[in-house]
Image (cartoon, rainbow, N blue to C red; front, side):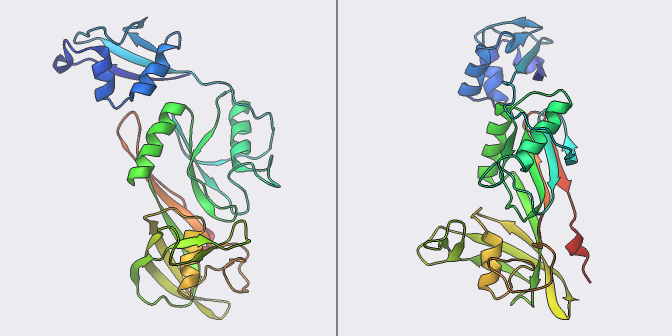
Amino acid sequence: MRQWKYKITAGDEGKSLGEILKAAGFSKKEISRQKFIADGITLDGVKCRISEHVRSGQTIALHFREEKGMAQAKSSFVPSVLYEDDCLLIVDKPSGLSCHPGRGHYHDNLGTFVLAWCRERGEEFPIRQIGRLDKDTSGIVVFVKDQMTASRLWKQRSRGELAKTYYAAVHGRLPQQEGIIDKRMCKVPGEKNKMQVCTAGMEAVTCYRVLKETVFEGGLISIVEFSLKTGRTHQIRVHMASLGNPVLGDSIYGVRDKASRLCLHAGKVRLTHPFTGEHVAVEASADFMELG
């Protein structure tokens, strides 16, 4: 069980507990959910109504109890943990591992492995991912340990406050050292998971900056940093291919090369901790970023 605590200040004197919780950012739905937990909302350790008025020096506590996770899988997989606390678990996903259960990967996927790893440590909760990465993309994945944290981080993501920075090795020299690619995207007819640039598709905006140019297997490549204004499937890969600079190792949108993997990596994430308000910034490097 996880909890959030707040000590009442002189400025809060006389306010209702509900007013304090709303001011702290808890939604009406989140507060209502806590009412049905035995010790969901307490004042100085005693369960109370949200209409109760508070006094300076008292302590409000919310307790988050989650249902037990459903996955029973056991695995020798140990996640590369970049950050962890009572609410968050941020890991570095290897290339070649799916994020979610899906066709052909109902058991061998990051979510199932992480949940099994948590269960082996004695933690019981449904694992939730905020965003996802393609199977062959490596890098940072954010997990949360309760519904309230998930709700708050999804809101941050929709406002652009939770954001990732990506890195890729691409073929050739880009037309500019930095720029914005604003090209709409849609699915390729008859293809399940293949996208293309098209005039009548969904908005897709990618910002890029070339970090360096080097040589790989006798050809010029560029190491590029990306930030996304939208989150379309395969967005970076499709946009790079549309410029004539496909990502190394891209078997769907690229060209035949000798890269051992898709050279695309989520290397940074920044967010605001949903309860402490502190800035959280996490980084993870990839081997291809050191080419040249």
